[in-house]
Image (cartoon, rainbow, N blue to C red):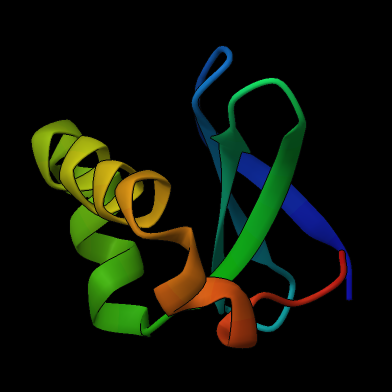
Length: 77
C-alpha cells in the first residue's frame, strides 16, 4: 500500500491517503516514551479531515487522549 501525505501538524499527526483511496491518521502519542498510532479512517472521515482541519485536530486529540481505545485499530505502515 503506497501512502501519500495529505496533511501534517508537526509533532502531532500526519494524514495519509493510500493508492486504494483509504485514509490513515498517524497520531503521535505518549509522554516520556513517544509512539505513533496509525488509525484507519473511513472514507467519509478521511474526506472530512481533508476538508476541515478542526475535525482533523479533534480526531487526533481523541486518539492522543485515549490511545488505549485505538491501539487495537492501529495498523503498521
